[in-house]
Image (tube, rainbow, N blue to C red; front, side, top):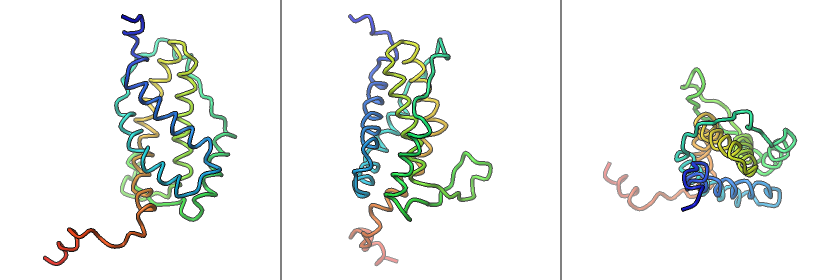
Length: 186
């Protein structure tokens, strides 16, 4: 039996989250060469998986909180944000309800580019901190990823999904046959 068996930071849900986060970040590290349709398809497919894996992250007790670090610079964030904003153009902004705000019934204007950049920052920081490969760094990476899922990037994924779905399927105007038959009943 391995000496790492009891190390919660090496458990399967964390490794799976790292794998998905790495795929997400790798894609967005190369977003400048991607067409909009490919970006939409990628986000459409990876977002539910990221949300699921984020919800499975264990709660880790951090022994040394001072080992927590952030790595994505404001310049890194802005470069991604502006590259995405250029890709999305007029389709970038949308209205959504955010239950984190005081008046959760008022729609807020949001930006796909901003939300994707926010998620990228959280995922990239998670990966890079985890790769420090010390127990304290891994503990902090897992704790921060779980905390930010609950307060930050989980909300963004949930808010983005309807808009991404709409952008991918807005031209498919013909409802499925079973829905057409329901209209005949009324």
